[in-house]
Image (cartoon, rainbow, N blue to C red; front, top):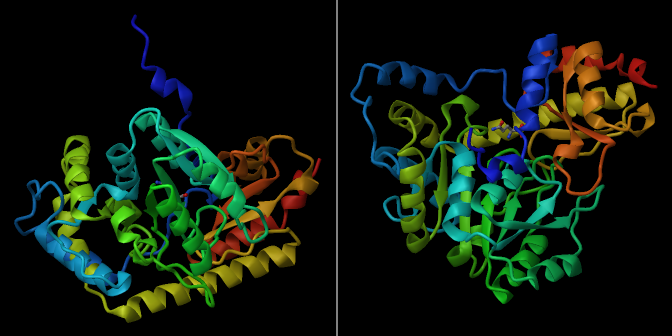
Length: 386
Ligand code: GLN
């Protein structure tokens, strides 16, 4: 038989999604793959039911249904502080996963370098491999996960084509402040690089931290490819609705990539989601409040149990320090945690370029009773100590 492609040999399946399968196998409370177990807003579900009897069952325009792009442009124009053209500056994709992949394929040639902060969301590793780009990793240092501007400039001196910015950040919960973003912006301009953002947690930010859209920084619109999705904002991760916002000449190229990758996102779901895109600002305030309550509940529970952890400024993940448990392999620890304690987590090593084996990631996008059940089980975690 002929060999399969070399490309696929260089990465594994997603450890995040593998941990969901392992959690299910042991009947664990799955705090690994980040998705909610509470319902999306009722208005979206009601609209979805109606849409099934309306005329939305064939392809929408490949770069997104007109109605969806117009509602999205209106919302994002309000938030990003510039008038976004729904026809020339948006491509609707199958989740931010496709948006990021399409963005990479749009800007990077095989052999181009791309800066990735470490820790990073694991898809970026596969995105670089699939597009033939070579990552340059720049560390983020705990506890605040700050970067060293000199290290970042050294990476830019290698003439990368782009930098990938996940803000708010998965898995470390960092929200980049204006001054940090300005340092990145100045370097992107000085070394003439694109910035590809992943801003799926744009509405999940804990006071006093605030989300700043990278594209809204001075001179950054021209070189920023903003990727995001509706998954986290409206609790609809299974709908796979994401998008790219960028200047017209970038979107022209991204439309072609997207067209041949997937043709388009699901038409009935785009139509139903318009209801969410048209929500007023109070919806986003309530979402942030709801997640603030969940964060406080979960972190307090971890403190009561006595496990050291990070303090997220945004997104819905927390990294737990398992150094004291005596494991060399965090994947082994996570398997034991699912099996013996009944809680699913993601090994931290799948997010770090550096050799990090002492962290695991849990998420708290769950109903309060699910979080309390997980905490109840986690109170037994010390039985895993070797
Ligand atoms: N973003 C989520 C996580 O990090 C899940 C992403 C996914 O599986 N597509 O867990």
